[in-house]
Length: 231
Image 1: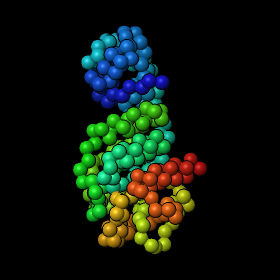
Image 2: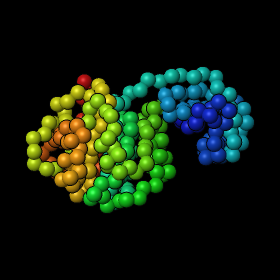
Image 3: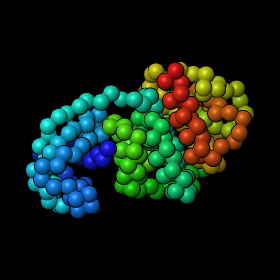
Image 4: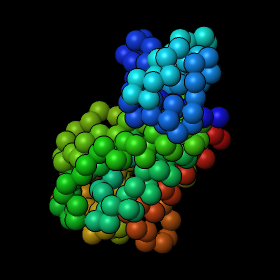
């Protein structure tokens, strides 16, 4: 099923933006009277009929509005973007398909990527949501200093790091309440960052015996939380 995206304001005004209009009218050759599906990324799936078939501003009337339930766990992953942006984009795409509510790229002491442009990343998330038929788009925050994330008030706060200390297996925890999980850069969190996280109530967790790349750790964590949430 082809699904177009529009903001709530655009839906209320009855039109698609220029990018979506061009795809709808010029690429897919939709015309007046054709039915299309639109989502605002907030759980609404609308069946609409085209009233003006213009490739710069396709207009429509809503004929049915279906409210969809969120199918993803209340998971927020704060993760250091990789130096190779392709690897971070892969993480975003796959975690979106698997199920996640929020992603915050974080800036750490050992971070190799200190600048992040989110416009392309947002498009990857939207495309992945369409692919997986998830009409609740995850929130992608701007690149944020780790210290700002550590102060967030969340019921369950977890950190994955490589230091030798007693850790709880992630798969042994419950995930019905909001969970914030920290994943560091390739050089891991610094000792001071780990210490500060523990002082702010973060529980150290293990993703298994293997040492994982940043994006792999993110995918393993997302998959584990989703499996535990479904159970």
